[in-house]
Image (cartoon, rainbow, N blue to C red; front, side):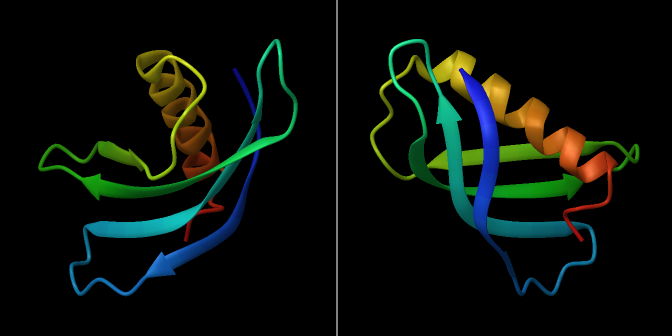
Length: 87
């Protein structure tokens, strides 16, 4: 699985300063298919030690094993967060 982009990224209004919730669509490629798009919701939460925890919900049926897909999406989201694109 290769993530191409996160489309339609919307930040939800959450009153907690240490938690950010988003929704959007992940566009990805697999070996067999190209440019698949699935809706996701995810939360970035800063824990007591200062590191970021990411929780992902995939809203559509996925044509790929779940655990590797979640790991790939989390890695992509960590990179976006490090670059400051999830403000």
